[in-house]
Image 1: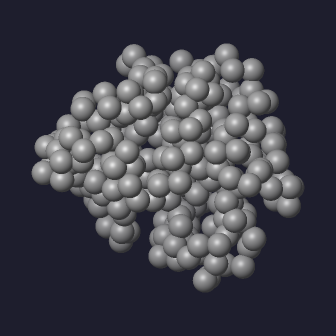
Image 2 (image 1 turned 30 degrees about the vertical axis):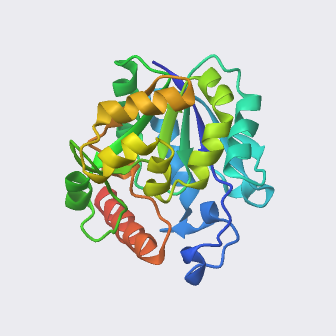
Image 3 (image 1 turned 135 degrees about the vertical axis):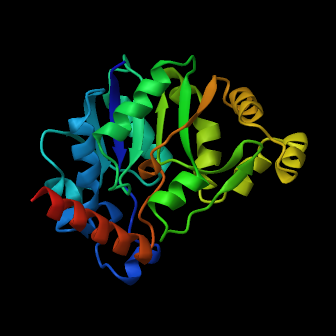
Length: 255
């Protein structure tokens, strides 16, 4: 299965990262001398599963983006940026949405996720990684986890969807995106019965998929990925420090 990709790189540097970096946009913050967004772009360019790549970013950082990609000027919100990208795609392939703050991602991670999605029936695919796998690879990081019947997980920073599912699910996307950093607020959208099961740690992955599919009006599938790189974003100084350390070590090994 071949997919098109959208890199969402329009977030202003107004969070915790501004304490240590003065760049206006998160995507342009350098890690080992390279803008953070370019690690994501280069991973997509190296993937055997990705066709066209569209980067939604502010005009000020257009010139620092990796070459040979299609640029679309960012709007005022994440949801708006998603639809600006959809407007320039031909909508023949499923679309892989990736945030610009996951510099650990690489082609193998992307290929594995898209391959897993291709083996299942669905219209919207979202990866989660286990707490155990995440803490094993990144013991220094602190992530937000949610507990289901099958274990504790953290959400990924990518999503694969059929074009029509994206177009038809805008109102839900607005809600989910506004609450994305607080899993409890997303769980509240599911209804009382599901909240109760979640609180007692009896809510299963399958039940969560079925309820999400009902809300979206399209079949949703949760993919348990063995790659914590999907979930380990850079949104605070300690994350940036870890990224610098990890990527520098990889570069030294490759030199």
